[in-house]
Length: 170
Image (cartoon, rainbow, N blue to C red):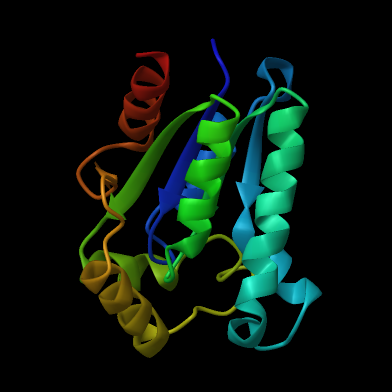
């Protein structure tokens, strides 16, 4: 399989991480780049440092692509500049890019937020209805041009993964 970049954009609890984790495969040189992991490096309130969070992710993406990895990059991406930067970088490196917008009704996402991994174990707190609703509305009102829809409510995780695998092969 040729090198590729898959970008998963969506609200918290929309399925991005679950899908990305299942796609990563070190033996096949497929890396998972979770943009949210960069947030704690900079500030308690990551919104003040978002430029640096996204910049760090793009530099990491460049390194992974240079090393021959395909990358599944996931994030909320309220501001689509990081997606543009990632797409442009992949085009320069002649790497196939597919951008997905996760689709899932707000009520489903709100329910998932309360039961995600770590919540019932006490390792993390739900983000809360207000925060998720706000993010959801920003994403709905600011779609990324050309993004394909991935319906994470009506498709199983396996079906989502097969959809992505088919897209990067063609």
